[in-house]
Length: 103
Image (cartoon, rainbow, N blue to C red):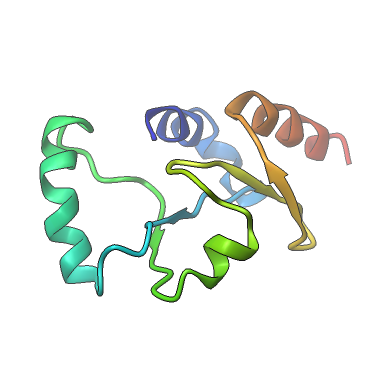
């Protein structure tokens, strides 16, 4: 997650050209449960800062399964038309963002 937060911060001025969405692994039942589970992580690992992008719940696991996510965190790239491109590193996200700027 730190690399995605850093990517988001570094490209904040370009946020109209990308979105970062985090999916939780489905082990929580609702957002209150998620908040309780994340509280110690936010305090100890993220320096008290919440993520600057939304965390989505996939209670059925359907999206996680259909997107081929097997571990957390996993970064995937979705193109501007909403088509899942596949797993991507922050380096690949950088390249995709630069490529979209050329269009």
